[in-house]
Length: 146
Image (tube, rainbow, N blue to C red; front, side):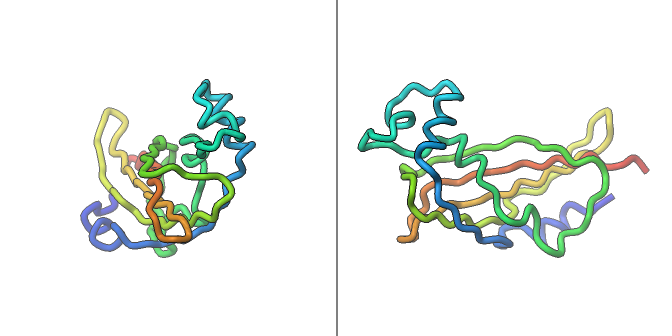
């Protein structure tokens, strides 16, 4: 079994990826409509207050999922979900920079054995350095029984 405390000491809060993004307005509006959104500031690209919808931000991914030297944990890896926190409106067509680090590492035990949770946090900034949004991606790894 992997030592969770050792992983935390070595990997938490260390930036391991920086990726650039530009979100397309039409694509964001289509995703917003497909997810049932009706507010014009998320569905009408001609609206002066138009902004990128949260599902698009949740879909942005860094070039790396984990730090280069992160150990292979074995077991079965699953998507544990996404979360988005909007801090300011994200406008389409602007250059965004996503800075990614491991935000949380923890384990839970259940009937099927121990599961390790890795939360990768990407903070999105504009060219002026304004922190616009934070996205969390959770990976769950069910360890192989010994």
